Length: 622
Image 1: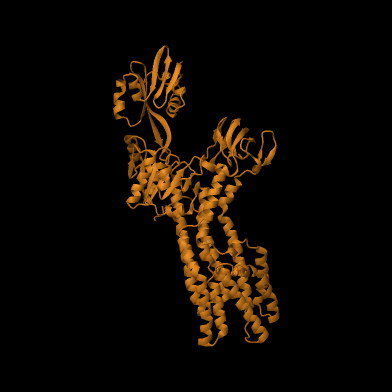
Image 2: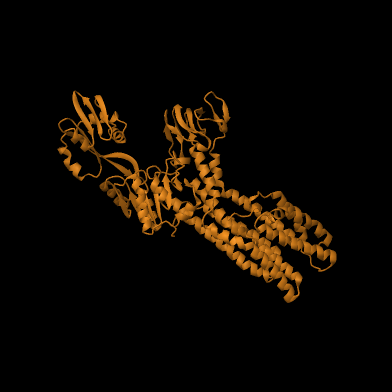
């Protein structure tokens, strides 16, 4: 639940220490008139915020403090002026107000620490940008199409493309990769990243909140403001909590007076009930953990767009992982090469921009390409060209067979290999063969093992051939796989597991996996940093490996352990404290100190989420 408005306002430390200074002498045996002079400014200056918020909307903790301290102060004034009692309680009301103000001050400081994740993100934003002509302007004035000069060591102020210069850029704030990335003309750069040793001119393509960093900040801000479903329990309880406490306080006062005849003790006990029951700890229990968890997540590359997803993560029973780009690198590598005329193969591959051609060129780095002419590309099939008046074809075995090329020399490879095959052939026969595979990302096996230890079932889904998907599934040891699945069919497999009663998450790249991400209980989109908005996913994983997914689920489970702890202690605190106060076993001043300490303890418990490294050493079971 939203904690009361008084908790939201920025506490004034000077006012808190002013009240402390005035209240401390009240612990000494002072004349009544001096006690009145010291307590009254505290009651109406220090306590003004309580009066101001006490009767706005629904009753809240300020209502309890305002009524309780006013009762203690008014009774003391009446006892002094009219002699109805030798006991005065100016120190009770004054010290209570002082303690609450001081507690809120320390609480606010702790909350500032809790939002350190957001602070760190904001520090990555450049405050100004230098135009190509040397003029420096505020970042708010930069427009799309402006040419920005970025010198060595400076933060890139906008998302854009390099127009001039060569350099390396540290993009770890987006990708988590510590190795700087080489940049040249045409390369994309992102706001918040740090330039290396070169000077670059960048054409701005995204500015302000449209940048990758701006989107991250917006996602974290929205998550920290939103509510988790678990808060509904606190909302329902708080709706009746304050009126019930007020009733208990009145009954306590009346019963003490009627049964024992000690109306003074009845008043003290009634005030103590009001003070001990202040629901600030209850109100802070969930929001503080959410604030810390989302801030911590942002620093770890986990962007929680929807707080409900934070709660749903801990309930997951199954995960479907997209193969390409999630389990594997999405980059083909040559794992086997047979035959001759590789210099012609390199020449044909060098003239093509296809990802397979790039992998072949990389593999044949030390080979000098042959001279070719009349190069042609046949989309989706292969390429062809002439060399020394002979025509050569390079592409899939099916493409070469269509061109009348005899592929029998490599028939065994065709029959047995699970890799992607590319052949080079002349008009008569196949001359050379390459087998390419997409390699599994480093750390994937370890991450899947950890997810299994956390009690999750794991499945791979892919549009690739069954033999290729099966091989990957066996290597990483998942529980099952779905092969030859079209992008729009992936969502059906998520629904299938859900119909079996399993809370199912989907992990993909956020592009062709969008339907599956949308229908899953929690969608995780692995991003390269170029598309952090990921409208179809509830959680964005900015690191390019599955360890980030492990961290996200760990964070969710630990966060909700903290929420349960906070709610438990807040409820127990009130359930035990109110009876003690009602039976006269708790002085209002001690009750005030306990109330302030309970709020601070809730905040400190939430802050413990910031310290342990992710993932925790021992996987946290559900």
